[in-house]
Amino acid sequence: MTLDQIKPLFKDYQALVKRVDGHIAGIQNTFPDKIACKKGCDRCCRFLTLFPVEAFSLSHGYVRLPDDIKVKIRLNLEKAGCPLLIERECVLYPFRPIICRTHGYPLYMEKKGQRLVDFCPDNFKGVSSFPKETLLHLDQLNTLLAGINRQFIGSIETDPPLLDRIPISEAIFILGP
Ligand code: SF4
Image (cartoon, rainbow, N blue to C red; front, side, top):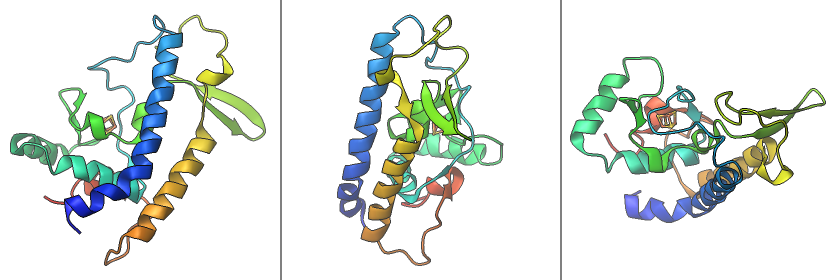
């Protein structure tokens, strides 16, 4: 499958990314002076495994990177952590997975019957509660992403079949070295 053939298959995923980015922008507007997330902070970055749709999307960005950056990524494969983190910046930031877009912001989840809101302790200092519309419902987001992933998998053929989750160190090379 060529890059041009695969691009339309990201339509639903990209629509979800756009919704998530819009939600995050809304939080930033609501709490303009309460967010410490900034370029150079890599506190949330870690080694990830991805659904195939996110793995292919990330690889779609990777193949366009200049060779010198690819060399640095390959060197990073020897280390722990995310190989895309170079000098404390994500070299595939526009293509980063959804989880990377949501880290640090108020994530709503239910665990063992308890309602929890998780966010980076450097953010929202002094904030005692969040307006409902600023909470990102993690289970709902994961359900949407899983559905989009199922559709994506159904639209491509691979041999051998794709793993359910693909480590980021393998994901980036799916569409090219
Ligand atoms: S993909 Fe980018 S934002 Fe996500 S963990 Fe890796 S370096 Fe960090």
